[in-house]
Image 1 (spheres, rainbow, N blue to C red):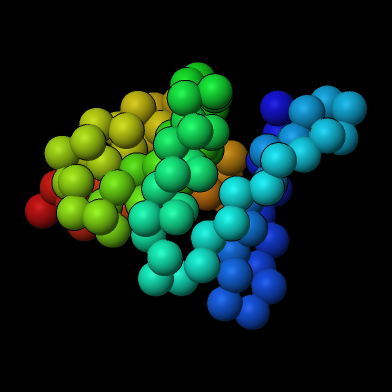
Image 2: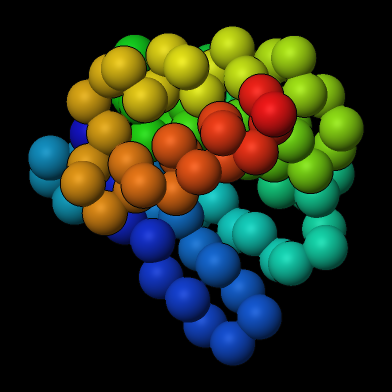
Length: 99
């Protein structure tokens, strides 16, 4: 599985793709936390070992106010195989939530 993030105006789209190129899109509209949560939770359940998906779930949980669960997922994601492009964001969010 491979993740790709694309920005289109106010949209942030996370695509979860297979090796063959089949993709499922996860749509993030800034301020639409509940919609993002449903989509990213489903992806996280399907990809429990994918650190990047877990990071995105943690970010949505933090926005929803579920700090404890977000911190738990962020710690796992930061110690996992996060891409270099995402790891600084994840570490920054973890630091903010644990102050």
